[in-house]
Amino acid sequence: MFALLSSRQIVRSSYRFKHTLAFLETNGTNLTPASLSTLNAANLIKKPIIALLVGPNATDAASNVSKIEGIRKTLVQNDERYEHYLPEQVTPLITNILKDSKFEISSFILPASAVGKNILPRVAAIMDIQPLSEITKVIDSNTFVRSTYAGNAILTVKSNEPIVMTSVRSSSFPSNVNLNESSNNGEIINLEYIENDCKTKWISENLTKSDKPDLSTSKIVISGGRALKDKETFEKLLNPLADKLHAAIGASRVAVDEGFCDNSLQVGQTGKIIAPEIYFAIGISGAIQHLAGMKDSKIIVAINKDEEAPIFKNADIGLVGDIFEIVPELTEKI
Image (cartoon, rainbow, N blue to C red):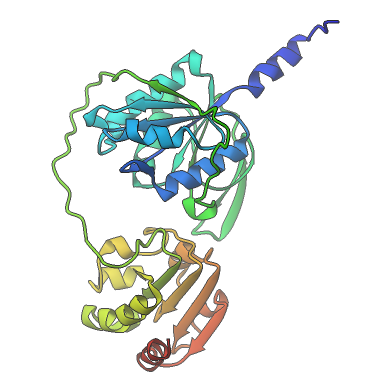
């Protein structure tokens, strides 16, 4: 017996099998933690995922990515011109995929990293689509939660665009993924290079090297603020504690502006947004811009001599006193 489908049922059925295109960044042959968080967000959209990998390591990384649960296809473009994710190079490739009817893309998602923040607005402008940046929760395929006003207001927003474009705040989603236990891994498709008139060239980079864990992914973060006075005091007070706890070092914007540490260590609205297991705020008053970068931490420990400091309103553990006495004693006892 055969059942006839109405036109409305056919439309719903075809929509159900639309795909989510996920642009993923790699570190060697592995996905970055932010990309793993993006995949977890993409799975909540509940559509088959098409992963996009670009750059010289894309082919090697694809064999690992295709084994991740939820990924139907992995698109690969390994031209060296994509190595540093120049947005002027990557954007034409992504827009070409989004416009290609054979891929049936109805959602586009990527990490809200420095790379993602460069690519998303360009793709959205070319496609004439309103994007949703730094989502923190997925309600359904076109409804999401994001924060605004330095995290003081939480918005639930719905997109009516033909392709829903979002970037993911990695601290709001786990960075672990499930592997497909069956032998039926996702299909790997090699793409042709998309010619463009890109006039931007990669010249060089100067990276700050550190023996500390990465700030974005560390489970424990020790952050210092204005009260640490200068660079020498900042390092002398925080480094021994960070070494004992195997923790990353962070800082408030004022500490960075005063030259206590490199600006790559800034935590806050205009710095890194993190959610470690434990966050130590040492000599940090707790301005809303700083809170926006760390208030999702599982446990917040605040040490400050000012008992009226705003940071104590958000702290799980608060110590009122002289940081130059408390921190050395804490370090010694650990």
